[in-house]
Image 1 (cartoon, one colour):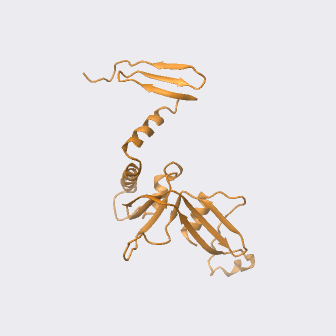
Image 2 (tube, helix red, strand yellow):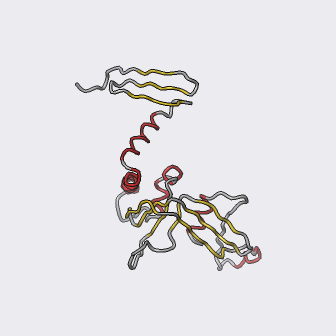
Image 3 (tube, one colour):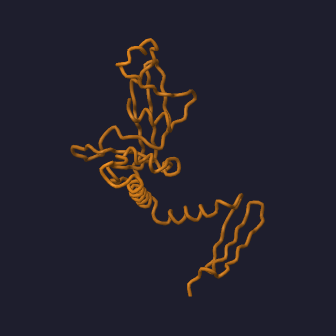
Length: 201
């Protein structure tokens, strides 16, 4: 059963449950179940916004991505997803054998780096430790996102992460002196003055 079938089941949303079951033909005892089988799998992707070689394959970010599966009982399961495996080699590739993974921008927030890493070769027991390889992949993936969004996106995300402790805030102003003013949706304001600690002379 193809990888995209499992990615559709894991990442898609449906009106009724879609649970792919893979029963090997050698298990003849299950023939009585007469479960529907997958007849066709289709991946559709929108315009490519960025592509790069990362780890052991090609990673492409596209504007939209969906997987459609048709089963032998006439049902169709289709959903937008944030990741799929390309069914065709990248344009211009010659004798392409590496993995080619498609993602949307939503994959950054919806998937752990290791979930993308798995489809780009994953961990090799012939290299460094798992933790070291995972760290190296995450660095490569972060460079991929930076190339896509630019370095300012990294700063924006760090600032938003620092504000997670505030609820219902509307705007934040940071002055060069180090003071911070937080304006909340109810109109109240919280001023945080700089203590001067940590400043370099």
